[in-house]
Length: 66
Image (tube, rainbow, N blue to C red; front, top):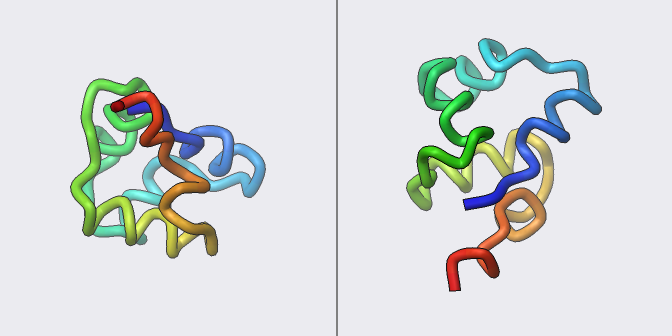
């Protein structure tokens, strides 16, 4: 699934480690999300979106999954 996580992190100068700690996952999970090797659970998608102050749809591209 395509995401804007990497773009949002870079805009805000947040490391993968910082984001991972904030949402309760490992840095490797963030890497996998950014590389489209892992699809976030609804709970994780919500946490990441809330962290950035955006909706889930603004961070995750569900159209690519249809």
